[in-house]
Image (tube, rainbow, N blue to C red):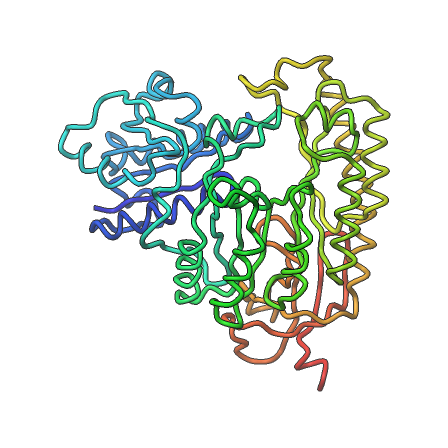
Length: 449
């Protein structure tokens, strides 16, 4: 039997999907890239905010024509965050769904399909349990040789007032260092060139099993054990958990990329406190100053939120002033979404949608100016680039350097007449043009000619 697996949402969902794929293939099922050819349709869902839930529902509706009586597929299965959040309500809204598995049940995907085939799966069964790392073991099917996400912990214990993750994914559960190193070595053996460490809060990794944050120790072990040409990138830092040892570990390794994703969410201390964030604006600035002093060439990415209940124009000014002081290389912005069951959904005063949109536009306009200047600072610099695509007619390669994380940052377009550049190797590229969201380079091979 063939299965089609569609993954929505964040990279952490992608990791869960790759482990499910490996279990299915190991059980004798065949992966299909086309839903019309599949006997089993699986959607690994996200429900972090309302737009994610809407995307999941749209994806379900898009796949229904491929299920009997209209198409070939016998079964439609939903996994992950959406069924975890709404439980058996999904069967009322979409009776075509045959089974759901929550965030603690990815490892049961084979068992579920076999039970469906045998007619033994309980009708309208709700997800059982929440979160966990038991499925993050054994084989995995990475979807790219250029990079792979590696989940070092599951869940979150921070309880920001706007966030549903602790309810959907449970408290933080870290994986042992040895397990992570084994998976990293397996990914390297598959030819993966860049390993990206992810968690809801990467900097608190290990607190629950080692009694303190030990991201620095994990990095030191990976640095020793991985082949010398593998890049290590990290995402989702919290400023308050960045230690001197972590910074020193990053500074002493050539393979640990000088790139940090540090979602600050806001700069107003009043709003940060209402958000339940552990940082203050001064702490954020202090940590960033330390990072930049120890990590020359650091690329810094952040995420912020506008329209949080009680946010004033003065609070917004605090945010933009901090942006202009720090000058983040990359910045993403969200408009607050009141999620049912979160403390923030009960806060007031609410910010109107129109006002929130104006604030979003103001933040992004400010960042556009900053990002343009930051990108132009890279003109003339040379960086190794991993190529991920080739456009034969234009002799253009598409790639990323240490400064571009997959899916969220710009790509580098590289012009080269060198025949048959190996897409599985890194190549030195000189940046020759830049705008706020585009970098253009040439290979150093041609520059030297």
